[in-house]
Length: 220
Ligand code: SF4
Image (cartoon, rainbow, N blue to C red; front, side, top):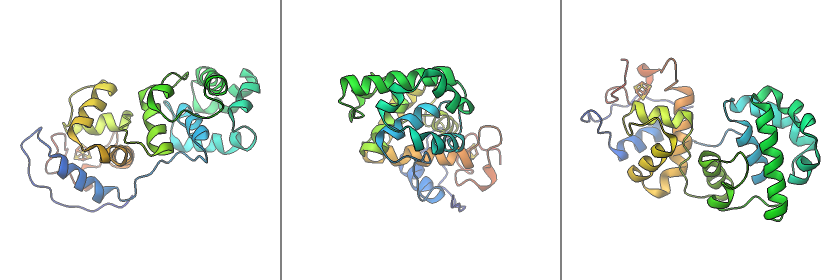
């Protein structure tokens, strides 16, 4: 991830300006993109379900093998729960994830003609699909304006005091009020990558962060 030190205009604490945040993230994360490897909306959906409490790197290792033989809703409906659990075991929470994948695959076949639905409300009716997963699928697979809030987005938003909440749904609604709609999807991935590689949970790298003169949580 490209990183440069730029000095941000000093803001009043807790008053980060949306434009400043967007400009700074453009400097810190020049090419935001989904790091979950996939070729179809269905593969993306499966990868996002597997990514709960798991790293994208691990999910990519698992799906690289899994998708060689199973990559359609029919494949997963016909696969036994036990076989699927064994294949996704290393992603953690494998029983629940296998159940969700099989149920979602069944629903997609029965209710949506075998295609991943391309609207948010239908997506959230699928097993294992909450707001975050539906927002990622909408933004990445269908080019929607969606702001998915995962653990990185939640942490970065709170550290910058863009929001003050531990509830991902409230965080999403607040961020959508702060930033223009056409930036939501890009900002989601910029914040994910910024949180993953710079504003890390345990040891944020404040000394090389563009926000370090303005961020209320800076350790510099
Ligand atoms: S200054 Fe530190 S805590 Fe603040 S956004 Fe940057 S890395 Fe995170």
